[in-house]
Image (cartoon, rainbow, N blue to C red; front, top):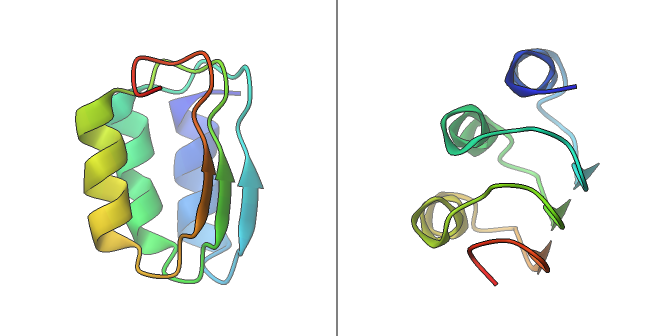
Length: 76
């Protein structure tokens, strides 16, 4: 599961509220599609390669996102 799978989720599950991507090989480029998930409230990015810049971008574009786990990432 990587960026391609994440793209499918973003295209077909736009009402998703919780997403666990812990220990997946998703990249910053792939994570940017999450901005389409306007209802996302909880996101687990533990042990991924998410950067602090991408995390801030997601937080600014997803107003309902209240719980984000970024342990063991560059954004931690």
